[in-house]
Length: 344
Image 1 (cartoon, rainbow, N blue to C red):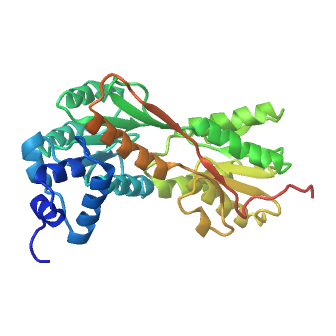
Image 2 (spheres, rainbow, N blue to C red):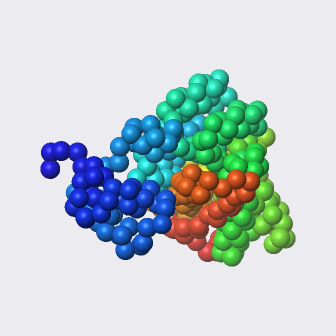
Image 3 (cartoon, rainbow, N blue to C red):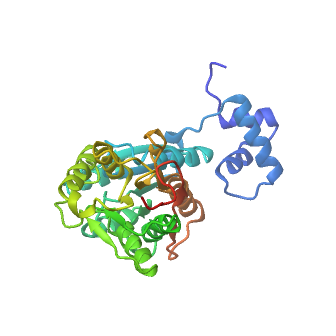
């Protein structure tokens, strides 16, 4: 079909009135499940696309959700964005992205743009805001825009939050190595990896082992500068080699750090995992390393889905005063870079 399909076309096709079709699409009002299913089938058959602009004129808000990101270089947030958008599309919402410089001054401009775009809801990813921005977020909330954040503490009773269980992830990855009979396990950190490092320390201490951490006292390497993280860990391990060369396993605070560790071990003719095991966090491209890297999968896909669902719930249920806080767990992906320790 060349023409744009309207709600009236769907109503005529199904011999329903337009109001019923509108309620079935929006999920508002008393419409039977059978009718909703018929309308959804007609939408697929006829190729209906909701007119976000027209809806915005009626409601004061467009059927558009937004994500505000602190960086776009590494692609680490790709799983989050993909699943956020997939969930939004199921409910006939569009998605727009905004990028703000960490510690920059353009968040105020972004908030104004969100209001001008008349978005219905927005998710602020970790690093896009800080406690100093909370008053501005609350003012945005007062305009009727639903808000949630990731990796932030409580801000307001109407702002939902998603956090990731970094401590548990650090504990479980360390415990995995301990159960492979490793006792001398070194954690390579930077100043942004405290939760994962704390979990490592907790696990080591619970098994009566001595934690060994390098990198936590070094100058901070920004998480957005992922190429530098690989070089950072390579250089750091080279400097500390005499102190940690007897380790049977290394944990990188993320996969980029683990990759730097692997490069250095290969230069030192240390076989992975025969002589030394290596593991990391995030699992973004751990399956393309040689050997493939054991990693704790960062639940960003689930985070994107949950963030969109929380926004949609706020928008449609219009609930007030019940802040939801979700804590998402990592998943251990065991690959070729870790093995049972055998004394040489």
